Amino acid sequence: MPLSTFHGPVLPDGETRTLAVVDGRITYDVPAGAERAAEGWIVPGLVDAHCHVGLDQDGAVDEETTEEQAVADRDAGALLLRDCGSAADTAWVHDREDLPRLIRAGRHIARTKRYIRNYAHEVEPAELNEYVAREAQRGDGWVKLVGDWISREEGDLAPSFPPEAFADAIRTAHEHGARVTAHCFGETVLPMLIEAGIDCIEHGTGLSTDLIDTMAARGTALVPTVMQLNNFPQYAEAGEARFPAYADHMRALHARRREVIMAAYDAGVPIYAGTDAGGVLPHGGIAGEVLELADYGIPAEDALGAASWRAREWLGWNAALDEGGPADFVVYDRNPLEDLSVLRTPSRIVLRGQIVG
Ligand SMILES: [Zn+2]
Image 1 (tube, rainbow, N blue to C red):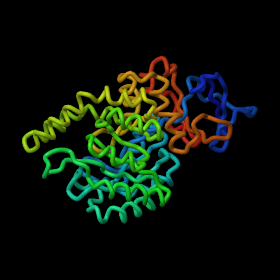
Image 2: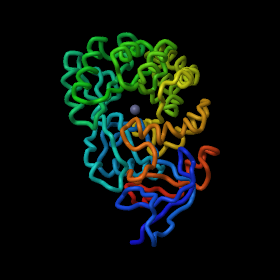
Image 3: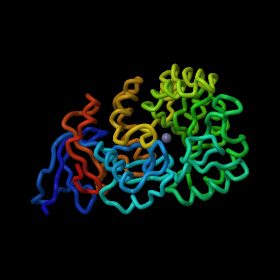
Image 4: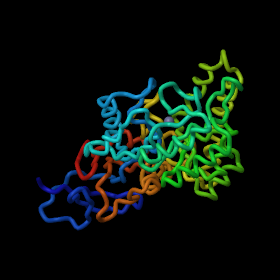
């Protein structure tokens, strides 16, 4: 099979180059006899930094459905997925050359009866450490906690665990070499987690200016899942009859979501794009998430970087398409920095050096 070359401006620097793929790796030393496979704007493989592979609204799904989810992400250009919690064991995806690279956080860890049914290990504070240690070893370097959820007693969002249990959990995960992230909608849980040194916050709609400054100083990441935040009014409506205070709270969080996320962006908190696909939302939506981040007011370069080179660097993959790096990239007909909507229609998708779309 002849070697393939790709030609065009390579983001993020935009320098026009010709690259070839040899043994799944990138080279700019193009061998003689290589054939041009595509021309266009070449972008490091997109990243969905918060999705759920092997999960749907009812819990774990079978392998066939898991494969369909991963293929939908891949075909949207998302070639590196940070799975933010799955009830299914999806380690087998690592062995599939045709599916995106997957970084698993194991299974969510939540408080008993305080999360979506069939999703999480539901535990009491005394058991938290044991489960964190187990998921840290089972996953790919991340542990996912459910930071807050509706408490039936309080009728509103409440932290899942006491502050000292969260602090112990974060310490335990770090001792096992895993980073920790947590689902957080409300305000109260955030200081407990951020002060204990959590690595990332998911959603983050309850962030205050003080906490944003702490996150910026520490480099704590934020994956706001801005498409998911659009569903808050629905969640409020669903809870209205039994939990009116919760419903009001969710509407208030929804009303100031743009202000909060943009305050974090302006303060320098590292923000990454995550679709939250796999629960309520469908897979393959990374372009929509980038467009929504841009709609908040994040400049195109940072909105795309949040789903490409910056996210790759954060997750330990090559940030730029360097000589010798893995050949994971997407080619577009137009400059995405001038028109992000082109992300919806990749012209070529290359994963591990193979043209997959
Ligand atoms: Zn999620």
